[in-house]
Length: 289
Image 1 (tube, rainbow, N blue to C red):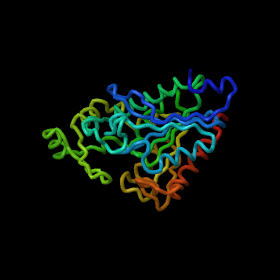
Image 2: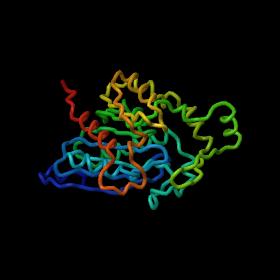
Image 3: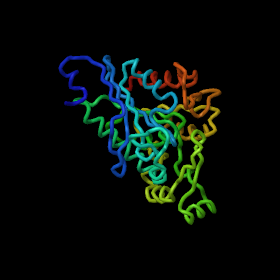
Image 4: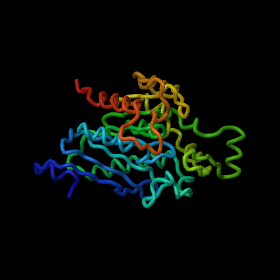
């Protein structure tokens, strides 16, 4: 039975699938959530987290609830090599998988999630990609996918090569094979295999965000906090320039728009609420005329 077969037969029911497994890059299993409300507007938001993130980080469940309450379907997922497992998707128990992650892996994961979504609907709804940070760069690379109608970036990266060291540091990484970055939340030393750079170097054209933007015909909303210290707002300006669109700056806002992990409040922080409102308003624009 397909996911939305009940609507074909005239039964309007909310359907919620939490921690479903999909098969991502290199055959690795990971988790996703899909929620479709009873008043589904035939528009499905697919949300992609960023670096050292996961689908249940901070306020992402509140973001999901916000859009579902307005009639949107919502799908969010863990990338397959983010360090989580299907048994423990939060605390990065699989550092070996994390070390072997790559940008092409995450692009493969997004494509696998879109493939999975296709199996869940008799008629595919409009798909709107929303990506945060590194996930924002990845969703821009999917602008040529005919299943995708619109794209939104929150604090997105504009250049993958900038994420790698250069010069002597790159040589040291190649020699040692692994470099480490501390996770400020878990205090783990997160390993990065040199294969990550090798994968990027072998796939520069595929992973060129600037070219993807310059060749995109998809309506795209670009949002960035003006106090972002993780991904500087200049990267958002580049993306908006390439797309010939406006950059929406969130004043006095950081990389996560005030959200933290854990988030114990019932409501989202004010800046993230504004981001959601801007995104919803963008989805309501009629681009058919």
